[in-house]
Amino acid sequence: MDLALTEEQRAVQKTAREYAERRLMPAAHARDKESTFPEAELRELGDLGLLGVAVPEELGGAGAGVVAYSLAMQELARGDASVAVAVSVTNMVAELISRMGDEGQRTRHVPRLVSGQAVCGAFALSEPQAGSDPAGLTTRAERTAGGWRLTGTKQWITSGDRAGVMVVWAMTEPGSGHKGITAFLVEGGAKGLIVGRLEDKMGLHGSSTAQLVLDGVEVGDDAVLGGVSGGFRLAMMALDGGRIGIASQAIGIARGALEAAVRYAGERVQFGVPILKHQAVGNMLADAATWLDAATLMTLRAAALKESGQSFGDVAAMAKLFATEKAGLICDIALQVHGGYGYTTDFPIERACRDVRVTRIYEGTSEIQRIVIARSLLARAARDGR
Picture: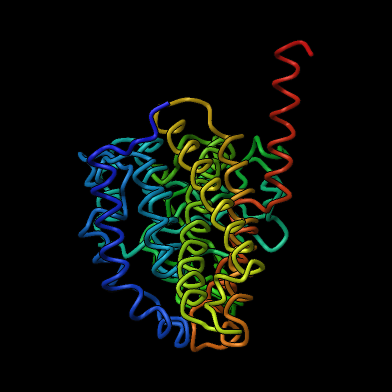
């Protein structure tokens, strides 16, 4: 097994790291405190090719692959998780359209997304009563003379108030469960698309999370993505890949927290020596470093499988489960090492602890990941006749 990165992957990683250190880190605290949406930064990231890392070059993307995307997300999340989550969703939407859209959809929407012209993308699947269970959607799409009319409410939509392009899932065959779900492409500002409540969240203050009300939004047949009643398959495909992005975000947040903790432990003197030399502190940081390395390898493995066209869903679920849960522990350890200072906004650790918590929830909760993994184990046992 070759674990070495290619020259292109290293170049993407370097670009993301340098941008994060130069532009994201210095203003991360202010964005968090003031809840400032990073529109200018997203346009700059589009110029750098980081809004479509795995999107084909002919559509304006970088064409660098899923491993490079994971590496970029780790670096951006290390700089500012609020920016990283908007980048992650935009990459996911652009990649989904580039893979499953028709020629008109690809050429109309993908270049706008990856360049930053559309600012960002949004993934409008969740609803107030349909989070982990997409088959419970109540948003409806009804036939009209010229296409479809969408009516319903979406909840927890990252960048929903800012996105220039969004994928919206709705029931086209009520009563058919997941077999009756269709995905539609809707442009920001469409008539009847109303931005409702913006969530006042625990973390990720620089990222907007919106309720969207679709009050008779009309779209043409050319807005159907992946065919009528093909929406559930698209959602599961996108979420499988999206879990690589969320695992990468968690890794980036945790890496930043661990680096800060190691620096602080090397400088903070108690009982005559830096606290890093105290075994209790050193052991905590050693555990954190081990978990972080394991999470990184698991996530890059999932990315490599996806990039090579192999089955990766269960591996991505494992990576997300492990990376997000261990990242939470790593951030908690980093706060503990900082002592009382870590609990104040003078240090970035308290923000890391707030930002990392949601990674165990969105793109499928930890409980859903365990269901995915368990089902994979059962299917594998059935195939092997065990």
